[in-house]
Image (cartoon, rainbow, N blue to C red; front, side, top):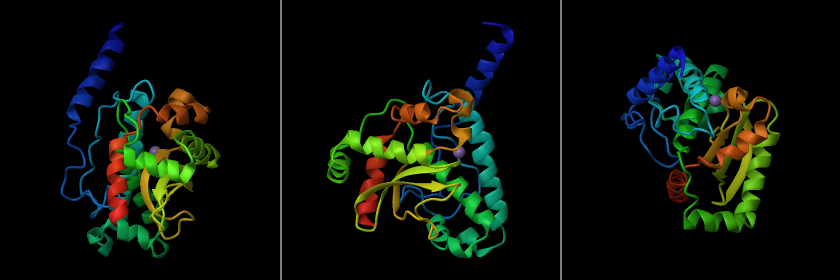
Length: 242
Ligand code: MN3
């Protein structure tokens, strides 16, 4: 290994070790209902895994830039947008539920801050597959797991421009799949799809372009190797109760 490359990878490993796995452990964010509720964090929450943890499906360099540049910028701008306003003490859910009354800065940066937290939490190295209850719900709604996967992939592929694909629980407590533009999410009152999010995929180009370039479909296929179904199962149970 050439010298520069060696130091580069050592640097990355050190950075990865520095990011502790306790993550969303600050008491500003409590785990309830949608998985991440509570008032906005005052410090940028840590990533729940090392940058290289999801290799080869999501590469370390993409994770580093995605988390440390993109996600951090949403956090910083959101924090600035709500500073000194009553939104500082409001829960993320209540902010989203009143989104039609908020500024574009709160909508875009609040969504970007939250959606990425939510996304990181539903990623894991080595996907185990859904538990029996989520499996049963998937079969009931979509007919089979393969049909669900097809439906989710189609939502992710056909989202024009930047946005997110979602599996969510609708108001009838049924599973549904859809997508949102930009940094919107299904909790927002202005969203065309509404419900409690269970699983999401970031389909902004910044999420895949370094490794996959224009091949969004290949990135979407790779996502299925790193879904944290245990987290989806927890979110499903909480959403059923809420
Ligand atoms: Mn992103």
